[in-house]
Amino acid sequence: MKILISNDDGVNAVGIAALTNSLSLIAETLTVGPDRNCSGASNSLTLTNPLRLNKLDNGYISVSGTPTDCVHLAIRELYQDEPDMVVSGINAGANMGDDTLYSGTVAAAMEGRFLGFPAIAVSLVGSELKHYDTAAHFALKIVQGLKKSPIAQDKILNVNVPDLPIEDIKGIKITRLGARHRAEGMVRTQDPAGKEIFWLGPPGDKQDASEGTDFYAVEHGYVSITPLTVDLTAFEQLPEMTTWLESLV
Picture 1: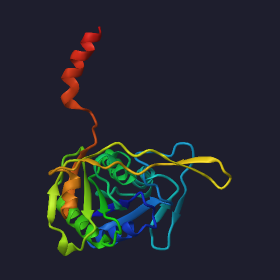
Picture 2 (picture 1 turned 90 degrees about the vertical axis):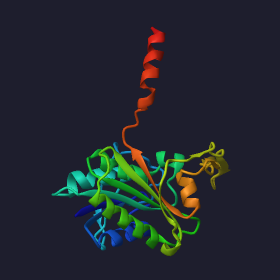
Picture 3 (picture 1 turned 90 degrees about the horizontal axis):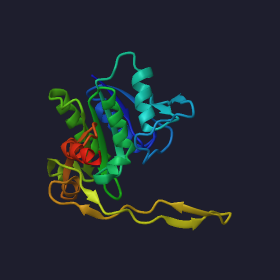
Picture 4 (picture 1 turned 180 degrees about the vertical axis):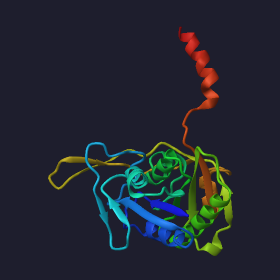
């Protein structure tokens, strides 16, 4: 079995090493990550600059691009034989609710699925982030489960693991995405030269963290697995939109 591993925190992040070490127990792994932290990169591609590679002493490959670039480049150029699966992470922090739209971790997994491979995004949720071994343990279990029983072709699995010792995890829940309130305003300040600059404000509080959501599961000590669809079409809206279109004519 061959697994491509990537992330958005950068090729030198603690999480990608923990994930690689774990999955190397059951598979041949290739670890390809961005040369810097690309959190919030979403599905962006680098279109105006060439991509540069650097092979590190530990065998990982650093790419001067986004998480999506890393997966696309690895599958199209670095593999002679294609991988069996793409696993992204372990992200330093949650990728739940609305945040999945911005996540480079989720985007790396989605690019793997776009190219036709089973894909998982794994994140560790907490404030101090001590238990990467816990997230790596469950990533390994889920990969083994996917190998045994594959999921639908157009889905990826978004996995969020509480930052707890393995023995304190209560179990695994299949969840839906929760939702947040609107984000806080921008933080306005000045650079050393006195010029006005802006920082992105903190995320909004949870709006929908009810039972069944990823927020609820993780808060109560469970690993959350949310299946995400690659096809963003709102199929249930098609009949209504057809009627709406007819009203415009």
